[in-house]
Amino acid sequence: MTVLKIGLVDLDTSHPGSFVPILRKLGHEVAAVYDGGIINPEGYAAKFAQDHGIATVCESVADMVDRVDIALIHSCDWDIHIERARPFVEAGKAVFLDKPIAGNVRDLNQIVQWVKGGARITGGSSLRSCNEVREWREQGVPREEWVYALAGCAVDEFNYGIHAYSMLHGLMGPGVRQVRYIGGSAESQRQYELMWEDGRRGVVSVGKTSGYLPFYANVVTQKRVDYIKVNNGNLYQSLLETVLPYLAGSAPADIAIEQLVEVELAAIAAKLSFEQGGAAVALSEIPESYAGYDGAVFAKSYKELKYPSAK
Image (tube, rainbow, N blue to C red; front, side, top):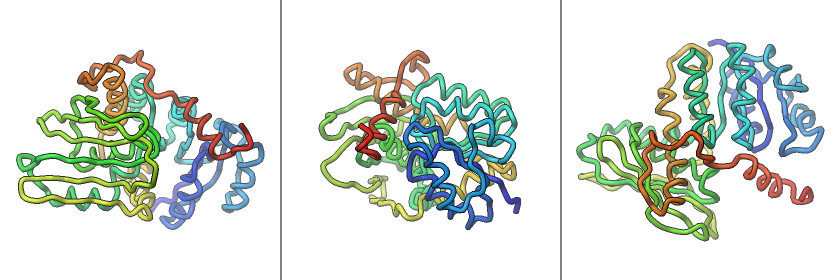
């Protein structure tokens, strides 16, 4: 096994701290960290490095590039993912983009173009590759037996809601054609129906709720009904075990980049469908100029939650 030197970029969420012990357990070195200060106060990166036994705190992304083999980018503001990834891509280093990968078509197209040009980039939600989804998919249920599925979670429609889209995509596979808003409200949850190229349909239910909801799915086929509830404790290891061989250059990607970004495209299409009163929106017809989800606005709200005194 090749020991990878891994860099953590932007320590905004709980993910970097959760990833460190798993990366080491898998035999890799967390070599450096960098934090842009969008969420965290000055000195946070140094404290994080000290707490986690990481040798190098970088002053910039450019300072990290030559120190690592792979960059894991955890920026809470998904609109800066392209900016953060570019130096690594140009240096031929692999990149993992934490969920959501991007919030607009323009950025997603840039990622696809980079990969087509030879870059190794992956990322997104851990729900696509979680054990429960993988085990259900491995049953090999024929597509002609498909009836319907519902996947859902709570908190918000994109930063957290992307997990529901990813879980549904993991269960049904790639090939989403269009999305339409079918009901609900911002005060509870909204429901969106996704249609696949082969005619199969599924629903996601996303948005805030008054209490905690697990990641869940109900899957109905001609012969059975399955309720799937995800064990959150296994999510990150399953994700890293899935993506690291590809990022290391020792295995093909587990999913083509065009198929991977369908998850974010579906969520963007859902937002546009809601704004258009429930009209069906094809993923291929989302305007590149459409604003999508605003990462800076989300990052501001996330900072206010993480550091209430910083309001």
